[in-house]
Length: 348
Image (tube, rainbow, N blue to C red; front, side, top):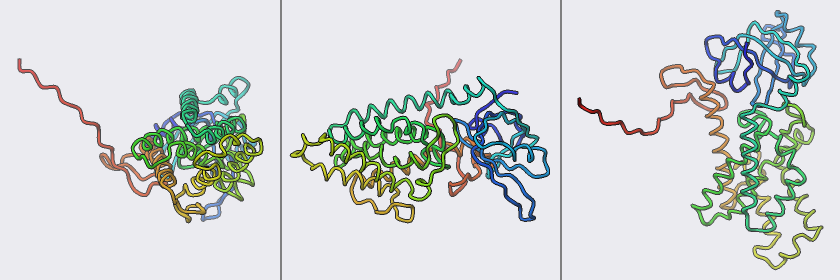
């Protein structure tokens, strides 16, 4: 039986049972009960490509075995897998522990995902290097000096989009491509502010959605739970900025325009307003061209990732119509293919 990743499992599983094994790490376990009062385990397993929720019922041998598993244990999970609009289901499941070299290979991550994130990180550094405002350029450099490793192992979310180790790198890189492109189209946008705003808009997630140095189970912290990533992002950027001020690194630009303090407050506004609406967690609404643009770029990339995952996972309920996948609001329709010119037929 071949091992596949969680993302491959979601792509391949459907109505017909798929016999496969996955190497995964146990992220969380909760004992819950059905409406009839019967207990079951709600398990979350993760690897470098994503996560799955599995229910283990109390009348199965696996219930007793998985009830004793330590959180963060790495195992091979075998079974017959199906998938519906609510997610992955496993039957006939069994597990075995990974040892030695198998664990090292698992922690190295899926090669395709790892290569993509390395390429995306290099592109992020390139965008930051291309900025012309020396204050913002020094700020992002200082961020990478202090937080680069943690940034590279942080997810963009706990679920729904880019919810995997390094997912924030993928999200930020794609957003920077969009920000750079539209800054060339709309001259009223400050490109340096857009690039730095993209980098820092979710930087509070380094505490809300981060991972340990070794492993794919997201860390829960009191800071993330009690404050959230927007206040923590503002606090982090303020701390980095004042470190540089105290070190006199901005003294040479005291007469520069715009004023250094103006640059700081505009950058903080992007972090504070990027959710676009107060009911979605932003303490303030977007009030500058860059803030409006950043909000839509963020939302667009998140939605496109959700769509990509949904098409890969969802079953067709009718030709060209796919089952709804949470958190999207509707069924999906098969995308329109690109135009291709037919070759003219030749008469013999």
